[in-house]
Image (cartoon, rainbow over all chains, first blue to last red):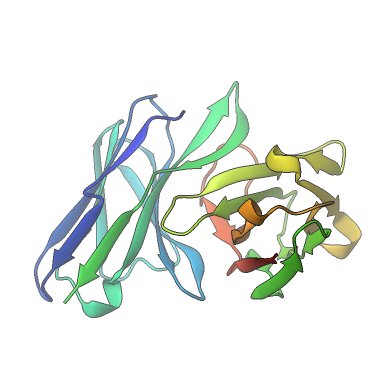
Length: 115
Length: 115
């Protein structure tokens, strides 16, 4: 178990309000990712981090920002939520050992509804 | 840019019959390939992965996949499906090494099992 916890699990928010989703890991993995999942689109990368304070944009980063001030926490912020951001959000980590990539492990997801 | 195509949005298979889910990828370097399964309302579970070596890889729950470089394919197979295999299946490709840029997913194949 890679020890990934996402919070909250469910959230309903109003259009125009800020929202922050949290991803917490317990095993000191370097790489962390935020994806969103929408019907017919699979999972798409929003942002990723390759270390503390080191982040980069993914495929669908518009309207989102991230922060990583500690190794264990990766925060995703919607500065002003829109209905198009209603989705299921997954956090993931890459498990590496001795430089070898052993795959990606995903959290349980956060279901966000913007009304 | 890397991409993954899962040509079949839905597949219906009778319980006990064999299964093959197709996956084609586009990637500029040596790919890391993955198959994930997602049950309704759940997170993603890794079925199997290919990094290098033997092109036929075995996974959990009786699944296997074959990497064919010449066809840019990584098809998932199971000789006899069970009703509990009904789920959404995602193929994904990623970079080797340290996990930068994350995974690129296909749009998924929804597997329906008929009694």
